[in-house]
Image: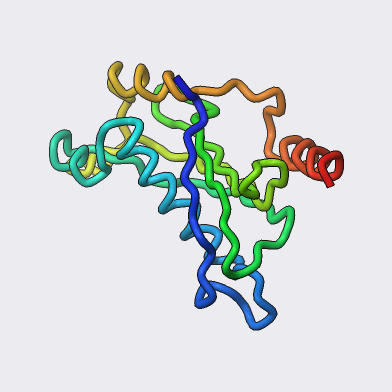
Amino acid sequence: MEKEVTTTVKVRFSDCDPIGHLNNVKYLDYMFNAREDHVETYYGFTYEEYTKKTGCTWITVQNEIAYLREVRYNHQVVISSKTIEINERTAKVEILMKSPDEKTIHAVMWVTVIYFNMKTRRSETHPPEIIETFGKFFVDLEQKDFQARVKFLRSQNAKNS
């Protein structure tokens, strides 16, 4: 089983700035939409279904993003996601936007979420089945902090250009 799941999308002209580059804010839309699709396709649920069933969801508490190479309109990109940290109450996901051959990393984002009960308005511990599901897609990165990861990915881009 693949631990890093992917989606291919086409960058739309309307999402770009006047010089034809993907607008910085739109990276977030593309990456979060891909992640939502990954959860549904590979994890087997939608956030809406899960919240209705359990009364709990995940709330984003931190985003870290680095733009490594520009993306131009009408180009296709591969967006991948994987769990890189799972704790009692929180999880961290890495989302990468890559070239179709996956040799160039256009952007990297780390999203930290907290498991949250909508009724009590408090965080809770992850249920064992969620830890198991997230664990199936867990990748233990060598780089443990965001800046080290960005530096590593930049060096990979330099090697591949």
